[in-house]
Image 1: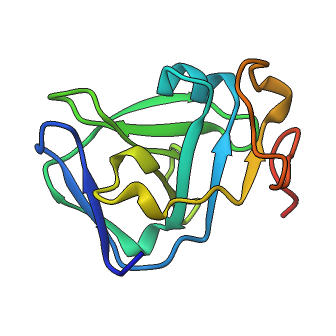
Image 2: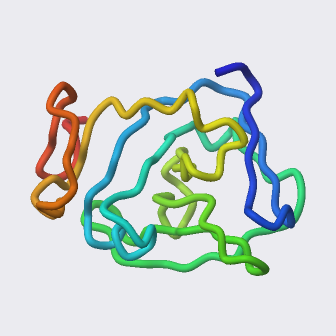
Length: 140
């Protein structure tokens, strides 16, 4: 990965840039992420909010309940529906943004460091036994 890294939606209406290295990269297996991704989990690149900005267009947001902090704020393209971000709380005070790894221009560098919400993981989704697993969130 080289900085800054960039990404966007499928139709090109929304673009973003991040100028910092990820704080973490992980797979979330919660039911909310399963619904949002349409698959077994979400692949997340967690970055400092201060290093992330949209450079073209503006996402639309959908809010869902969070097990830890009020609400998840999921950003998606209002034109094509591509999911771009998720995990920030409603107030935007978490200081972090979760980027959907599939929205990266070059997702080849993504490597999950751990799995979360493994109690909700689907039995048909094999996970990497070499990375740590957490029933909910990892310890602070």
